Length: 321
Image (cartoon, rainbow, N blue to C red; front, side, top):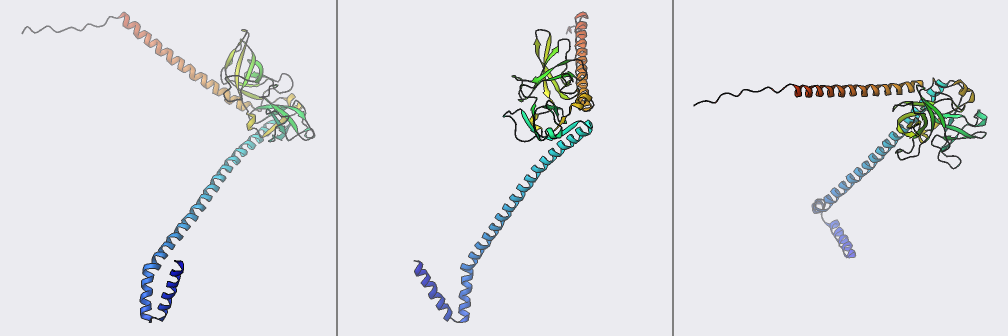
């Protein structure tokens, strides 16, 4: 069939070559209108479809590039905020600290440790406090020449002596392991004297007892009371100020800085938390006063209703008609 069609095309072409110019032009016009024109239209539509497909692919690549850049910008903004907060912490401390990066890898096979990029050559000593801009991170456990390993507060062996921001209550903070720990990381404040009751939202800071952590490092805020132990002490659930998984840069405090104290470093944050607690207490007090006043008004109205008999309404006489 293909051979026959090819032979027919050759014969037609030879016949057209020997025809006069006028007849050949007329036949060429008929062929262009019936065969070539539809093929040209099909080719034009195919070119348009190919161009649209290429433009769509280019737009998709541009959109993906914009999304990727926006994600990177968010990461850069977060990193910029962390660096700004770290610089602010350095300005507040002024001296007695070693900046370090928390490396990606974990040390000693424990998920609650951080490998820090500063060691003995930078002046880091064992049992030095590790802090971030938001508060306490952990303590240095081992020191090498150029790196060190710190345990963070979720570690089972971590303990810190703390006090409430107003100094009214003391206790020991450790990692909490219990059913109330929905987020996976919470702290437990133990050994608070029974006479010292702490309100929710109260800031908890390091007390300076023990010589490892200086007084004034923000540890967290009180969430609620967990229970009482033998009627003599109270236990509270504490929300930490720092999540170790979010830490990328830290400051390692020197023993000389511990002796000087850091109470002024986190004072603005603690004051803001105290204002929030006072505002929440005032709001609750207003609500209590409003509810008490409403209850008193209701009681007074009920009492008056019970004492004063209801007024009798005179009924008109019946019409004799």
